[in-house]
Image (cartoon, rainbow, N blue to C red; front, side, top):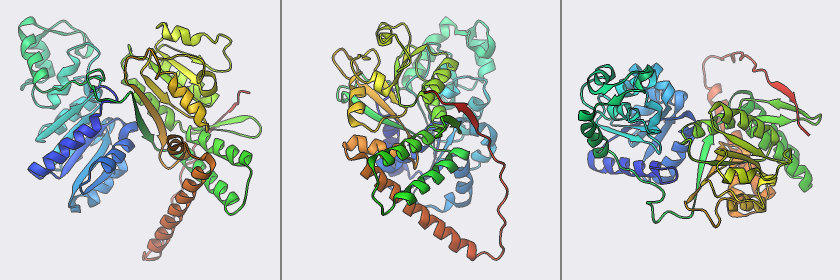
Length: 461
C-alpha cells in the first residue's frame, strides 16, 4: 500500500477482527525506530478496545515484568535492528500476531535482522508484512519477505538460490529466477498480497496529513526540559510582549531540531533525533519519486542536504543564499529528485506539483506561510493525492505548533496553554516519584552519568 493509503489503520482493523474471532492477546510489531511513537498514537486513536503498548528497548524490559498480567491486547513495538540481538528472548513469548512494518527492511536474505525476523516468525500463527515499496524492481527482494510469512517453501536461501535461480553476486541480488520457476514464485506473491495505489483509491481526499513522531534523547532532551521550565516559570502569571514570547518559542523549536543559536551567534548542536527520523523515512522512499522538504532554520537545511547526499538522492536547495531563484523550475523538469525549501523562500510564487510528497521538517509560526507552502504542491497540474508529512517531537513545541496551525488558532496563547499542561503533568510525576522513594527501605544513590559533549559551530547570518 503506497504512502498515505492507510497501512497502519488497515492492519489494526485486522487485529481487531482477529481478537473478535480468535481471542488473540499478544501482538509484536517490528518497525523502523523512527516510526515507533507513531504506532503508539495510532493504536490509541483507532482501537476502541482494551490495549496497552510497550515501545522499544525499555518497553520490552517493562513488558517482561508487567505485560503478562494485562487482560486486553498487549502490543510490543520494537525496531528491526533490536530483534537481531534479542531474538531468543523475544521468541520465549507466545506471540499470537507478528507484524513486520516497512518489510523492505528485511529484503536481504542474508542480513542478520532478516534472518532474526524469519526465525522469530516461525512459530507465530498470524504473520503480516506491510510496505509501500517492497522492491525496487528486483524480484529477489521479495523472497525474504515472503519467507517471513512462511509461504516460500522449506528451502533456505542458499539452497533456493542454487536450485531455482541462476547468476551470481554478493547477497544474491544479481540472481534471477529460472524460467520454469517464475510462475510458481509469482503465483505465491500474488496469492498472499494486496496492492493499493493512491490512484486506485477513488475516495482518497486530495490531501492527506500524516505525522512522524520522534523522541528527544540525551543532552537535547535535558536542555529542552530545562529551557521550557525556565520559559514557563519566567512568564507564569505575568504579562509579556509578543516579541519575547516568539523569541523563546523559536529557541524551543531549534532545540526540538537538535540545535540552538546563542546570543553571540554560536550554534550549539545536540543529538539529531529529528534528522535521523526524517532520513529513516526517506531511506525507504523510491528513488524515482520526488520529495519537497520545507525547513525553517538554515542549520537544518545544511544537515538535511548532507543526509540526502549520503542516501544517494539528488537534490538542490532554495533559500535566501541562492541567487538563482529558478531552481524550482529545474525541480519541475526532473533535473534532480528532491528540493529543500526554506519556508519563506519556497512558500510563494513557485510551483512544486512535480512531487506529491511534502515533508514539513520545521514550520514557521505563521498560518499564512504554512498554507502557502502547502499550496505549492496542491494546485492545478497535480495528478495525485498530496501527502503532507509532519515531523513532531513527542512532548515538544512541535506538536503544540502543529495543532495550532491545523486549527488556525492564536499561536502564543495555545502553545503556552499546552506548555502549562506539560509542566503540571511533570510536577505530578515528580511528586509521585518522591512519594515512592520515601517508602523505600534503603536510600539509593544516583549513578553518575557520563556527560555528552556538544559541538559548537559559527552560526550563519
